[in-house]
Length: 199
Image 1 (spheres, rainbow, N blue to C red):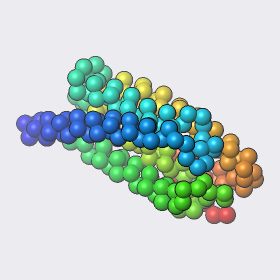
Image 2 (cartoon, one colour; image 1 turned 60 degrees about the vertical axis):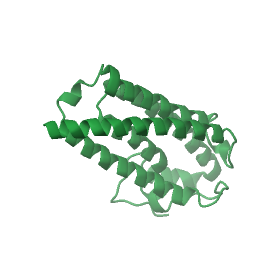
Image 3 (cartoon, helix red, strand yellow; image 1 turned 60 degrees about the horizontal axis):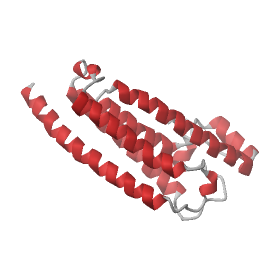
């Protein structure tokens, strides 16, 4: 038990550094993203502000509740830290994989694609990048089960879902029946590893 407490203390120190890094990273990314990129008209207005502000707000609340105020982390006493750490690592790795596979397909060039992309990871799930981002939130909730953070995550999910709906409507307007067929066969957020979309 003492050994796990030592690991827990070391992990919390690492978490502090990680949160500080994320805050500085997202702030820098926010400043850089004010300059709109090619294809921004396919995103919901002010999408860059949502992308920059939501993680910062979530991580600050998660960190304060998990490490300082400890208002809503009662479930941490029922789930051993080692199990939470393993779940965190597994979900975090999955999140990074989804984000990397998305980037590899969607951002081959700086210009927005003019054809519907359905290959690779997009053959299994329509929004793998947003799924990866949401899984990062889930990973941190599993690491320290803050009920307040779960409430914030519900709000974050609703915002991302609204962003996805906006972007998918634009894709429907651009590609018509081709996109509708794709949307009907490929899930929005939860991938089906046994069924890949084929045109």
